[in-house]
Image: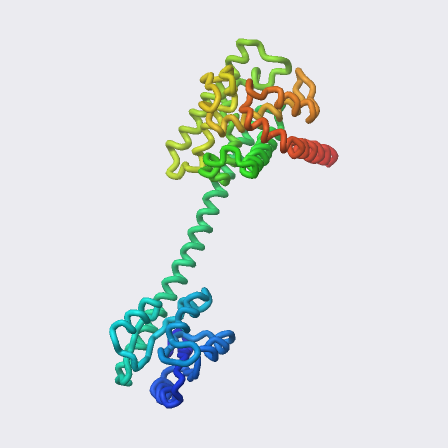
Amino acid sequence: MVLNGSRKIIMLVDDNPTNLVAGKEILKDIYKVYPIPSGDILFDLMENVTPDMILLDIEMPVMNGYAVTEKLKQNPQWADIPIVFLTAISDEKSELKGLSLGAIDYISKPFSAPLLLKRLENHLLFQEQKNQLKQFNENLEGVIQSKSMQVTNLQNAVLSTVADLVEFRDDVTGGHINRTQKYLEILIGQMIKSGIYTDEVRTWDLDFLLPSAQLHDVGKIAISDAILNKPSALTPEEFDIMKEHVPVGVQVIHKIEHNADEHAFLRHAHLIAGCHHEKWDGSGYPAGLKGTDIPLEGRLMAIADVYDALISKRPYKKALSTDEARQIIEGGRDTHFDPALVGVFSKVADEFAAVVRNAIHLEGLAQRL
């Protein structure tokens, strides 16, 4: 039998030389046949040659056909090779055992040569179709993964572009969005390592969460330049206006979700945008949420956002050192920040500082270019 341009390989395993000769005579004009006198020799040969089918006698010394089948099925490399028992044992119990072990057919001797050839042809054709379907599914899966990656990359590009537009307007916080995203990644990595909030984190798709964090200040797009870039501290009235960037940001994100067919990538965005100014003791805004009523995404973003604000220079304040910023974050335990997350932060504060040093280094290089 010729499929895919080559003759199929059949290994005929039987300890009786007469049966091997007779079997080869029946099969040789159609298949490439390997007559094999024992299970041990079969396995030695299969280290170099993989058959398309194995015809297997049951009653053999040392290793009978059942034992051979069990060993074949235990090896992932050989487990899918179709096995047909070709034996003089014809009782129902023996046939049931062979099929239960994974054989695809059980043919009793003596048999009709034409009938044997037709049954083998059908089994091999089915196996060929099965292999083609498997390959098709694998190729389809690859195409789907590729398309999914393209969609994800497009989604992330859109998020990044929107975030860049916001940051372009808010020219005193250059690099803030990129740095806070890196802080979040560091914090979440340490949470997983430390076993903090693992049940919740396990449900997150970080490929969605981290990029969506770029939208945490998207509502600033609706704040006037006079307030957004004021070269001095805001008045209470101006600060009330600035606070509006939170609900506006949530509205923007919900509008994107409403208009998009695929918006799972934004499921964390409105929580981060809407809750990163809430405080553990309930004194934050806009909703005055307290403790674990604040979504975990918002509690994480609060640490990243405040830390970066502390180390950043403003017209009305100098940039604090990373050590000073660390002390302020740790001092905000139980008041501004989730105490468990402050513990996580303390373990990775040096990594936060490394992000800042790298940003300063890159900024210095850019200024020299």
